[in-house]
Amino acid sequence: MATSRGFCFGVEDAIEIAEAAVAAHGAGKVVALGPVIHNKQVVSKLEQAGLNQSGDIETIDPAHAVLIRSHGASPETMQRAKDRGLQVVDATCVLVKRAQNVVRQLHEEGYHVVMIGDPEHPEVQGVIGYAPDVTVVDTGSDLEAALPYKERLGVVAQTTHSPEHVAGMIAEILKRPYREVKIVNTLCLEVTRRQEAAIALCSEVDVMFVLGGLHSANTKEMARLCRDAGTDTYHIETWEQFEPRMAAGKKVAGVTAGASTPEWVIREFVEKLEEM
Image (cartoon, one colour):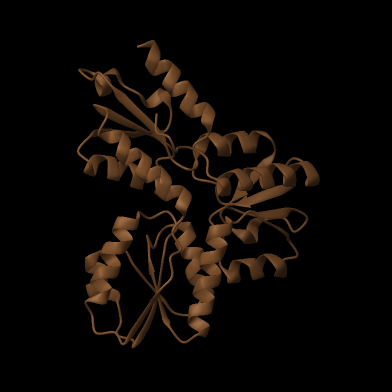
């Protein structure tokens, strides 16, 4: 098992805040604006405890409280919630909140902000709302197609990206004739530690199992890094998705998990695997 795996402090905080909000307001009286974290098993448990979910702030009853998930939200979304008279419970990860503040500050200092990240990811969509004009890039082709020429660039990254990917993108940016490039490290150290532990484990095992939500960015990235390390790797959510062929002919299995994966999911998987 990887030495660093599973829940990060941001996820733990978000779950505790969600549970406390339901306890304070009552079951059915708190509505999360999207999944609190990218893990279906945890989200299901919170829903069973009385947390509702909506993808549209306009459909939430003003008598209810709205929970901002760990990925954060744009200032526009926060304002819309207040305009509708909703009580806002903010479960934004502190590192995502820092990235939001950095983007705002870079813009105020006169930099054109560039964010290295997945434009479809909710964290990125929320963070770029903190400046009026942010360019999002995630591949070399994005740089060719989308990166404008501005004399001063301020660069940040999606918190769950790998340092290697971000460093590669920054290297490509620095090859261009910008007068000034200011880079602020917004990567999550907790995610980086999990990535490093997973890569280290790859050299000791015949097959890797990366447990976590199929839509979880940090879990998908960890699975990609394990595959890049040359180890047969399977990204699955729970034991139910395991197939015997995955372990056929293997002697040593490595197990790790994304930052949104609860310990009970990891424990169940390991126990079932050991029974084989």
